[in-house]
Image (cartoon, rainbow, N blue to C red):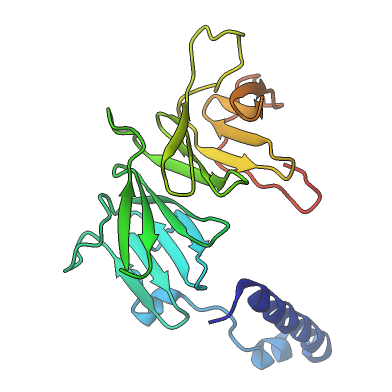
Length: 250
């Protein structure tokens, strides 16, 4: 199994060699290049793989180097040769309360966390090949688990349809944050309970996004303030995903 770093180095070397070959072999119409090139990508489903997951919603790589893919049809683990499938049609229970997968996250220890649409959050136990449910709220379901990111201290931030949860490394809830109408001071909370995206930047600031726009954590990420974005029409941006690039730009 290739590690992520070795895999990236190998991919870079392959692309460099192909670029050189293309420069040497390409004719006026590109025919020579097309004949000389090997196929680098092929559908994993063609290997008997992942029925119902042709449109993956989430992907992650765990500490063992397995690539996980989740979607409406369930969860699949790719080992480089084929998929191990976890679906509601499986012959053995796998611990997942819902097989409609919305989010996947491998934390800094490489542990895989699985967010579902209706079944909450689960954590993968590789020794047992089983998923253990993680209780976020004992009073009511949290709805969809939209997004996750590390907290920088071994724990996890989890964005759901009913607020933002802060978990420790064992999956215990440390805090639950949500939108408060007329909060004091005004605007110092989440713009909405639905948190579709979370990102902890390199400065340790937590950003959240959702249908009510973008927010930035303050006071050790215990409170949030909205960040206006230039959206046509002046309404809030519906933030579904976030990424921090190599230069620290969001």
